[in-house]
Length: 222
Ligand code: CA
Image (cartoon, rainbow, N blue to C red; front, side, top):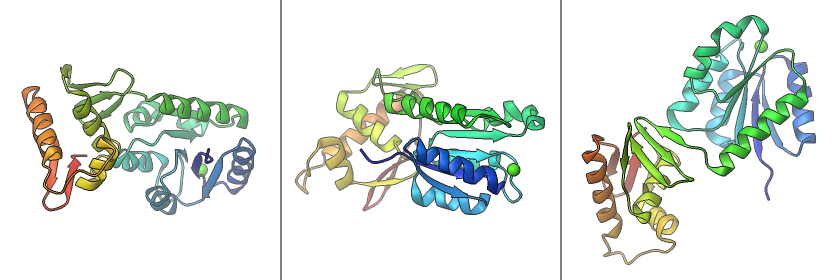
């Protein structure tokens, strides 16, 4: 199994070095960054399995980075805060942070928290995209409070688009990941399924959830 990749942004070089060594020791691949801006662009490129953010960074705060990550994805985020920054707890949770740890902390505790978050994800935690909630364990989709009843294939297709909201998936990608094969070029089965999902979402009050990108494929509105 490939190593899980953890990206850390922490401007305190000593802490950054310590965390890097300890997390490597715990079996993770670590991408350490001192700068918020650089860390943020690396997050987009490297697609880490989890991100550890120091809250107080000189250029871009950990909270702002968390908010930007949440605009396009649901990578687990653990925030490190100084004790006097605890007042921002609610704001952090609102920014979509999964967990936080106040400094000073034991590295073992951070490793334990990281393990918990990654385990949750591998079980398939319920996730929200806008007003839509997807529960991969029960394979259910809700719009607000209302369940959107989908066929198994419709569920797989919607969950696949939701794996990266905003990203455009080509028909070929959808076919090979949802149907497990490339369908004949004349087949409109993907479009038919999309139309059915749209209809069911609309019935529940969800309009414009799936975007058609002409000549390419489909994307979930992020
Ligand atoms: Ca700091």
